[in-house]
Length: 238
Image 1 (cartoon, rainbow, N blue to C red):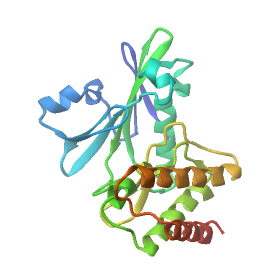
Image 2: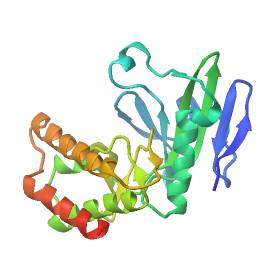
Image 3: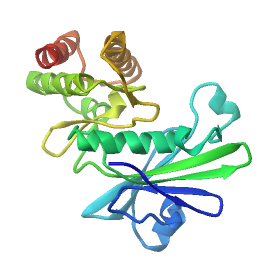
Image 4: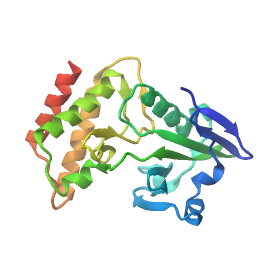
């Protein structure tokens, strides 16, 4: 399954085979005019939840993080469409869908070029009834079986050699049936083989849990929880 590409006056629209993306889909004002803004969340930028209540979508604008993000908010050097973050994430999400892995299903993306730079947006289907682990763990602990299932899910991605560039507690969801999903595959890729990066993914996730535990007044995470996650990971990885 490949990304379908449509040229526009100032860039490109990218979409899955069963979708005909329109440029206005990437403007929050369009959804406001349709009375189809379902909500929003705030991180580096506003992420909008849009569309019909029975088929909600997530609209995300690509924004820089870290020190460079303080100087250049949402502009990236253009070195070709297929090198753009939107194209690469869009294509990866389609591959993950083909593999039946629990990741967001992409709807469409856009890349807008201005001279030597570009900006981009991504539109995805929302995971039904999902909350991220940080939101959940501030309210209640998870059972050992749930931690093991999270570990097993991460191992499943690693078995398919899927590298997640920012595996953290915010990027793991539990859906309405408590099944784990991974989200935000910006800068992710399918690699040639498993390697040390698998353990680096896990260590990054552990740092994320410990960071949230220090930051939040209540966050249900313990060493035993981590060991349960590793138990689920190891059982599936082996």
